[in-house]
Image (cartoon, rainbow, N blue to C red; front, top):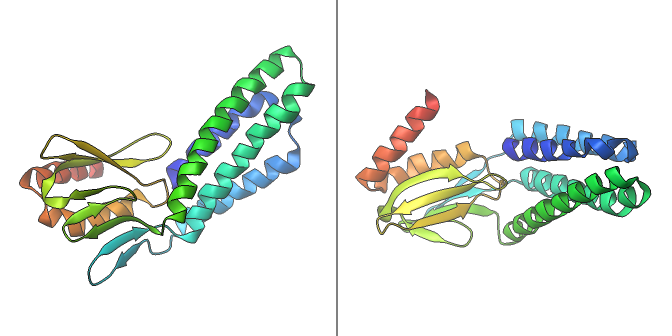
Length: 210
């Protein structure tokens, strides 16, 4: 989630050209929110749930709240730029405001819809059950996985390659920490995976630790 917070902050900083026209109270509220999210990221609740017949990586209420409130705040800021700053500014600032506002509206609007849909479909983001590794919408047989790695820019996902040469994407929606997902993969997927996946996974983890 820390990567998402940093990404939201960097995009928010792009409004610096029109920053002086934004109500300071909005900026202060957003900065307070980033601080709370960073604290939530440091004090994580238990994301891993082990049951008799399955293992789940679940999002926490605080993590989901930071994603939704943070993205929503910047969506509102994008609307504020388009509806208030642009009509009351000069030509150059209006043009800049339109570009920033439209990009922010599309980016944060799309992201919020995906995250909200994920939140509403249950707390489990990834599940290991009955020989399958499952995401929110798709599942892959563990004994068919040949490689798996993190990818994506705005919303992180696991890119999974299978024995039939397909690539399946299972999104984390930035709701769960990568290290927690990696631990579940290490403990509950790798031991039952193909030799090729074991080799690729161990090599990738070794490179990360170097």
